[in-house]
Amino acid sequence: MFDAGKPSPATASLRPSEYTAALLHALRIDPQRVRGATVLEIGCGSGVLLAALGAMGATSLCGVDIEQDAVDTGLSLLHGLGYRAELFRGDMWKPVAGRRFDLIVANLPHFPMEHCPVSGRRASWSSGGPDGRELLDPFIEGLPDHLSRGGRAVITHNSFVDLERSREVAARHGLALRVTLTVLVHIAVEKAALMTPSVLVAEEGRSIRTYGPHVFADMHIVEIAAPGSST
Ligand SMILES: C[S@@+](CC[C@H](N)C(=O)[O-])C[C@H]1O[C@@H](n2cnc3c(N)ncnc32)[C@H](O)[C@@H]1O
Image (tube, rainbow, N blue to C red):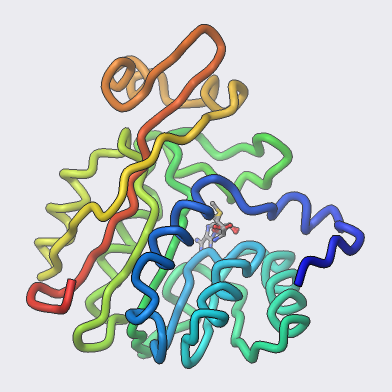
């Protein structure tokens, strides 16, 4: 049920984005693949994706975020909605070392830019370093140690962050990558201004479309799984 409540500064800075919405849309297309799954979210932010996966019937909910605010906000949301969840403050895979999950979701910071706050968010929200891959590569590399047999990851992937390289990293680790959905997202002008210039120049007219000050870009929802799993 909708509860406007009184937004705290943390809740406001963790507000879900178009990326969150697209990832949720992709997961909702195939609800039977969520029902009964053990779920992990890396970079769980507001906790809303875990809440949605709980509503879809996931068996267990686990999240990791580098920011304590996100852990507190996420736990408050999930407990308020009646879900049991484990949320850890920590870096990527560290808090879940040795554990495996049926479904791992992530909307990682992977915008090609140096670390700095933008649009009222923390620096940890969007910045993926100059090529956008600072978290993306270790995320893909860690999947074989954290996916259950037949498990899969579903993530957001900016089209301007070298999808073919992600495919190669996945293949090197025995995983298959496929795009399940592509949507156009709006990129705020102040965020576009921070994009690594070489990426902007290379991708303009390809995955990025600029109309005066208005910038749009393709964003993929990508599934990464062991070959032969039911993708
Ligand atoms: C783009 S936001 C996505 C938040 C949420 N999943 C959503 O879709 O609304 C990225 C999240 O990753 C978190 N994060 C950044 N670096 C991280 C790291 N090294 N390990 C875990 N989480 C991290 C940020 O704090 C932020 O909450």
